[in-house]
Length: 376
Image (cartoon, rainbow, N blue to C red; front, top):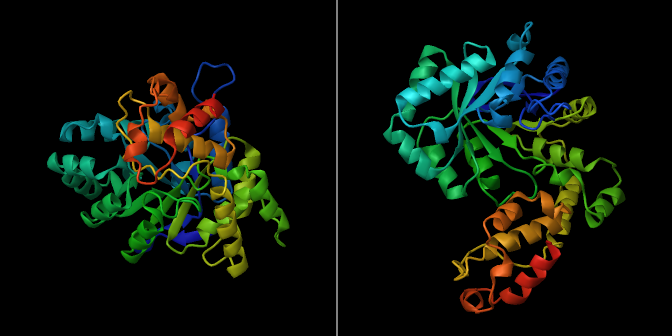
């Protein structure tokens, strides 16, 4: 296992961090997690050199922290650092923050949390939490030894990321990043900014929720033609590890074979591990994915709100994503929400208000009907 120094913290972390959000449910159906299997997977990873575990209060119906706590009995707690997250939706005041942290410490069966994150923080929430004393709470808990490092995870636009990062003395940040997200959310600019400040970065969604692990035919053809043969998973992880600013790459695993494969991949993936030809391959792969785009909608939402409440941008986004990554429309969360809320293209009456507002002059009415038909 390769280890990396986490920026200004000086902590040595395994390049592979085990994400504890995606464990399989029990076969009996009476539990969110098959506890014995999950515990075995966690300990397999630790025995293989992983020393960074990532969980959160809300993961797996609030059971993930409990299972992690059980897995870290028998001396395993001393071998790892734990990252978990404050559920921002449950935060009302200082008392609620203290109660939530106490509950998480109990579930994890530990007296301290190494990396304590504000979960999915955005600028508006940050301003609200500052007003109720969140910075002082984090500072106090660090001083008392209940947490070691003050952190946040992020899924918003770069401008919000830059503001939050510069507004407080953060110890670590966790961002979504992969070779399809270089200009999305915090993106490469955010990664570089944190690196310049010496703030370690932990990566989530390195495989984009598993979508980059299953290459469509035109992408697989590029991988197959390259002189060095690697799986799509390995290419995605090596590309991330090539960045010196990246401290840890999180990966969720459901099978012992996946743990073993990740241990192998991260044993040779380090900063500077990719040469110019390999980096160009990933550029070509990114373009091959983008070539599968069905409609050039930028998501500006000038076409909305629709008089009949059609979620135009959401439908086009789902259409593009399903095409890019060959995913099942029935499994697309965004599309399910659109259908549940009755904001589908079947509500369109062809009034044309959207097309008049579209800065790209897209044939929205025609493409909405096509998209809705293909998406079932």
